[in-house]
Image (cartoon, rainbow, N blue to C red):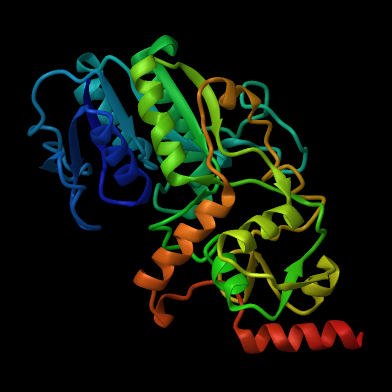
Length: 331
């Protein structure tokens, strides 16, 4: 197959390019190249998608196109230039297109969706992320038709090259050992997907002509099993102390990500459905996920090689964790 990746230099798009290359496809990557070079063995066409001549360097037809855009203007421009030359189009969307974060076990085809962003929206504003992605989805289906468009609503991407301190906090922290502050209810469900597994599915879905909307995430698992799998992957036997979410809120600890946060912890019940999506249809459609322990091991290896202390943009420090644990035991 001749496969076009709109991107190819960042975490997911690079993994897609690698997967397509390894599957024997003739791979072309179009990107600005500001986040790095695409992987070896693919053709790189440099182009700025904000410019009208962005696609002038692309010739011929493509059996499959994969787009990870977040800006509707860029998604529409790509479709205008390439839809008539593309056999199948994968748009990598996000679970942020869903409007109900509280109800567990929702399915892609029936879950309520956010309203698409209007034409005059500020596409750079993170608050508009989900609505912009929904607008991109609609543009893809309109241009390609429902039978040639795969909407892959990605969950939390994890694994090597993840530069955001979310999942990566936990392999590093558990590997350090000692008493570990584990946030919230140990039976609270979480779900992630290894970027390499999602990339592999995207490439195979393009080859198979998969169409429709699917969630790109692994099956949900209790937080206690999640941390146990990570500990196994990094060869650790930590002492977990489960700390109530109300205490964490009182102490000013932030959920999910960012400064002074405990990554992947989300308050219940308002976020009870955010990491608990029913991915049975996706698994039936070919998504294959590896053992979380393998993802944790590989993530830790990449972190130790690529991160610097100045890269930290989330999690809590060892000193802060110790103080929080002392306060919890003394309450």
